Length: 119
Image (cartoon, rainbow, N blue to C red; front, side):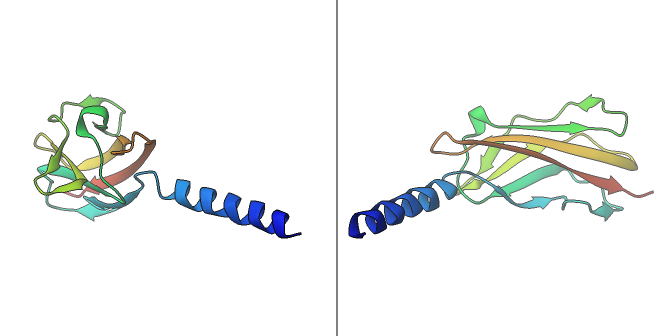
């Protein structure tokens, strides 16, 4: 019985520590699902842990699904949790952000969201 308890406890510890080993999206600018009249100059994604910009991407697509040219992903100075890209001047419309992040411990996550620029 004591051995079984130890094995179950060890499995729970391993599962709990691996859950924190990924960079999950914590916050986004522009915010997820937001509507704004002011077009952003950057997309800033804040993750739950540091990311490697050389192995991470942020794509921006218009409502037709056409990829728009964005800058090279980089982290903010002093904060490896914030992945940033510069974006071109955007017009009114709906946009999709598609991201792939590689955390500093090499685990990968991905996701997407939309925001709208109002006229």
